[in-house]
Length: 94
Image 1 (cartoon, rainbow, N blue to C red):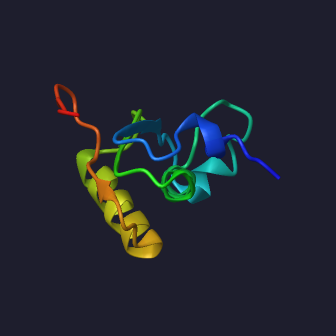
Image 2 (image 1 turned 180 degrees about the vertical axis):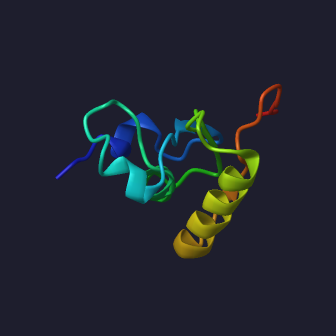
Image 3 (image 1 turned 120 degrees about the vertical axis):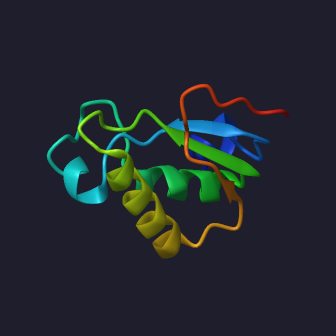
């Protein structure tokens, strides 16, 4: 069986992916067209990417909230790829 991630982002050097909600927040926003940070990390793992940049954070989250959510998600997922939180003005070389 083939999945969308088999083609969409397979072995990407850089994946920039929506991560609007925490897992708890996502439950109340299913179908809104956004992802949770955990889903983003899982998708990057399944796609075997080299570098993930989660972005499009909930505007109600403070910088401290984002730092905490990112640290918790990374500790839980233990990614083998590089993760750089999306920041305004960030640039990346591929």
